[in-house]
Amino acid sequence: MIKLELQSVDIAYGHNMVVKDLNFQVMPGEMVGLIGPNGSGKSTIIKAISRVITLCSGKIMLDGKDVFKMPRGDLARSLGVVPQMSILPSAFTAFEIVLMGRNPHLGLLQYEGERDFAITWRAMEMTATHSLAQRKVGELSGGEIQRIVIARVLTQEPKSILLDEPTANLDIRHQVDILDLIKNLCLENNLMVVIALHDLNLAAQYCDRLILINNGQVHAQGTPEEVINSQNMKEVYGADGCVYAHPVNGLPAVLLKAGNSHHAKPRGVIRDGIV
Amino acid sequence: MTLNQLKSSFMEQSVPIHFPHWRRRIYSIIGLLIALIGVVAVATAIGSVHIPFLTTFRSLLSQLPLVDITSGLSSTTETIIMEIRLPRVILAGLVGAALALAGAAYQGLFRNPLADPYLIGVAQGASLGAVVGFTLPINWHGMGFGIIPLLAFAGAIISVAIVYSLARVGKTLPVTTLILAGVALGALWGSIVSYLIITSGEKMHGILFWLMGSFALSQWSEVKVVLPYIVVGVAVILIYSRSLNIMQLNEEQAQQLGVNVEKVKLILLAAATLITAAAVSFVGTIGFVGILVPHAVRLVWGPDYRFLLPLSVLSGAIFLILADLIARTALAPTEIPIGVITAVCGAPFFLYLLRRKKRVVFF
Image (cartoon, rainbow over the protein chains, first blue to last red):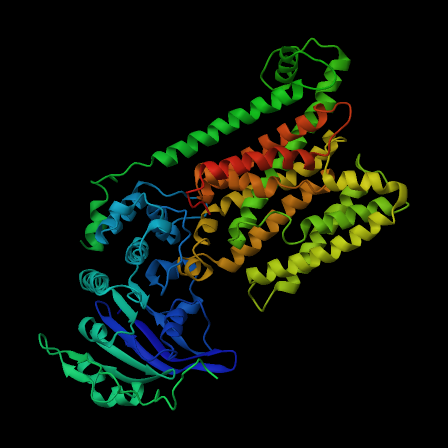
């Protein structure tokens, strides 16, 4: 059975433990959301799975093989990553950037052939970026760049995709566009998807399963209803009574109201600047 | 549309966009190759002793295998062409190609448009080696050339080795640390060189001439020594051109696309340093080629390293052959240091390109 599995993973930056004893599994066709406050370790987990940083202890198994013992090319053929903010070299065209996804499939002395061009083109059609093919990426908007990066991941033909806040900095329409695209890809191609998300509402709408992370540890995991409830929101985010049922599909929705913070109670008034 | 459909449909549907710019770049490579051969022939024909163009071309052709022409020249003319001019032109071409390619590789490796082959201490190390060679009392001549090229080569390699070991953090080599260590060590070598120049007395002229670069004493023996380094180094760098493209994203994304970033960095660094050291050790630290040629190529043909690198090799060779032609003929019989020519001719041309394409992002 193909699956992605993290077994008691510990990760540290220097002496600072950021992820402690993390365990979870992802099955094909499943979209798993990593949620949690800033600095809880979501991005770190994505980086560890894609082997950009090393583990202190534990194992990450993909399809029964240890990720850290695979050659990088093999890993890139089965795992694609959409990073948080993609800074792309501005003079390259969108097509050239997407074509880079074929790299793990090519030998050192091999050039891209018709087949690689065709796969690249279809990936751009799937992400609706084919009309941008000859544009320089320096001229493109945030949403377009994000779609191009997703197209690049598709040209890798991976079995699993990791996404780190792919909708940060996008407007609501583009957020929905990107997540619909990912959800469809996940279902139709039986992909394993791990997605780190800030937005709890989007996470509840799109993910089959959520893993709530706090201080590098799993606070709760399960279906959106099991994870996003008043008690967890209070314990992790310190937000009281903010979970409601979505009026259309009944999934949990988080609605905030002003003046509910436990932390930022101003103790004085600033008049002529800070004295 | 699923990935399976994607896989099955690629056979029947061809890509609906064409790659005109790819074809254009391949034609450009062929065009520059022909131009290079022409420039070699013309540069060999021009010089202080007047030899007609056609005579020169016949003489050059007669040297080629499978060509049945006798040059029918006097042995003096033959010697001028084959033993004085041709090795000089070939060496200028090799050095130009090496410096331009190393510059392009460093710019890609460091993702920095200001990078040039001398950024991490190659030039300063070579200069220190050479200047020490000038001040040494011994006068050793083996292999048809003096001790100065050997010391310059050693200085360049040792300098980069020190920079490399200083910049290494664990198993990784952070690019910023590498640049800073290179600049700092380069400044140290530079100050020692300045001191040695001030105290060198009557050798000062020779030292300064070496530092600005010259092909005046080029011989076949030098070409034979430089050629293997440059051929191997160029081949290695060209092989990694796709990796260099992907490393323009950033190191994290390059790793996620299957590039072994640390290994590629090390290989490219070693190859680029080797060809730079080989190039400067005989002819001095010629400036401007390594930074100007790759940028000019980028402005004209775009940033794709698979084309940028071979086009830089050819453009660098053509540029330096022409620069040396001006250096030896403009004020003949006085030779102008070639570093002066590369800057005087190269800078205005580069600024013209920059103006013409100023609205286009190019790095």
